[in-house]
Amino acid sequence: MSEHTPGPWYYAFGAVWKDPDAKTFRIAKMDRDTPETWPPERDANARLIAAAPELLEALKELVRWMDVNNHSHTPKGGAGPLTYGGDEYSVVTDARQAVDKATKGTP
Image (cartoon, rainbow, N blue to C red; front, top):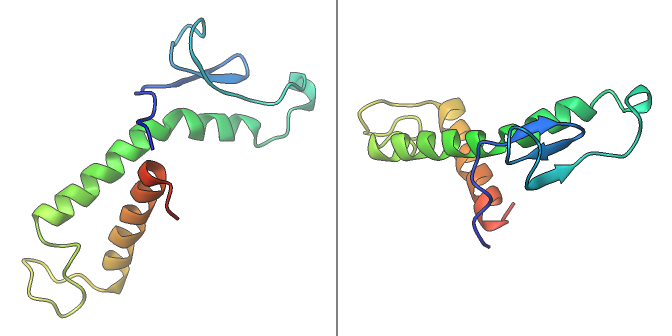
């Protein structure tokens, strides 16, 4: 899988753009409906898409930090510097899977 278009991305004029002035490089186009008939989730979906590069980098940093500090491999009762319970271990696993989905296309 090739690398994504680097962020930041911006939402304007019914689309997500690389350029904050919405003049070049459209990332995603929202539906063609008029503003009066937009589904209520349209703007929320567009904001989520526009935030994708920052969200991905934040998750990568979380996973990296947890790996460096040996937390993500320390399930409850483990011997790492901090002992995380099931919830914390699950969160890191979910973050790792989300990064893999975004970068490798694996669920």
